[in-house]
Length: 103
Image 1 (cartoon, rainbow, N blue to C red):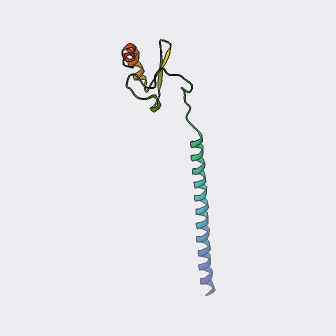
Image 2 (cartoon, rainbow, N blue to C red):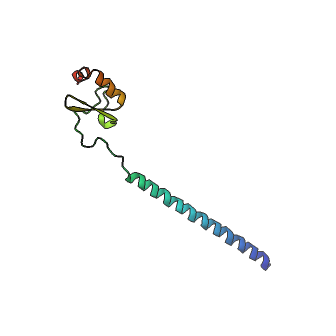
Image 3 (cartoon, rainbow, N blue to C red):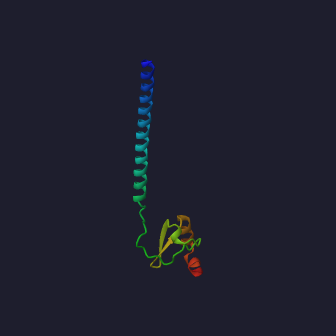
């Protein structure tokens, strides 16, 4: 009878140890995930155009507000214009007066 109790207690102990080891491992994973999330939130993207004064607040080629996304700029007649893409900038530079007249 003692042998059966010993085997049962040994199994319970083994299961308990496995359970606690799994919980400890899971807890470490959660801590690692939380730390990674904190790092990602702390690392803010660098605004390449911070402090630039734009002549208008929208992409003159497509009309998109610069606040929605700024990818490129062009200087024309002493002013800086922002564009959502290089393609929009190139379109503007082909005939700037056409787009400035619409402004």
